[in-house]
Amino acid sequence: MLLPEPIQDLINAFSRLPGIGPKTASRLTFYLLNAPEEISGDLAEALQNLKSGTDSCKLCFNITKKGQELCDVCSSGDRDSGVICVVEEPLDVLALERTGAFSGRYHVLRGALSPIEGIGPEDLTIRELLERVRSGGVEEIILATNPSLEGDATAMYLGQQLARMNVRVTRLARGLPVGGDLEYADQSTLLRALSGRQEMS
Ligand SMILES: [Zn+2]
Image 1: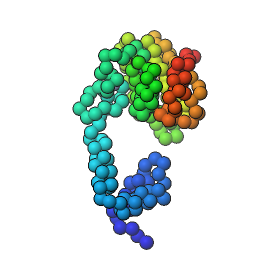
Image 2: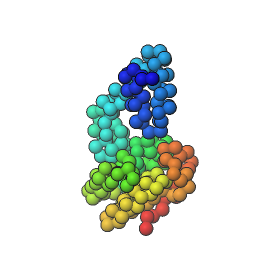
Image 3: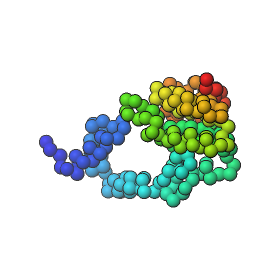
């Protein structure tokens, strides 16, 4: 049976999202088809505003509201600009902010190195990070990429790049669930990883 185009289009669109297979894509599509207009309307509006209402921080590449050059952390005068915590995604910033234990600034890589997915250093904000360090005033870089294959490879790469610069480089302590995402780690685990961070050798 051929499905009408609008239905097939939405199924295809859902299928392209991470973690959503064809079955879930169909289920979501038919759910929306039968749900009150308001539910699909809200979803459409939220999707529309997602890109148009947000921007990227010019300094650390965290998410900001549209029209805001710097994110709240970068624009705050209370944060220590001598310490930069390097994370993969904006959600990691949120997770670290929730611990309340970090008073430095961030740099969001917007991903991790992955040869399999064809993601190289130039696809991340690594150049901008090195520029921040080069411009001075940075004493410590905390590499807080995910405890995964890609996260470790990214930390290793950054460690090598930063070794030539006059900056202390540390990596979050082990103890975070391996293969897991930083954003899903509970606060006390994250706190321990942060306070037990070790020098990269
Ligand atoms: Zn920022």
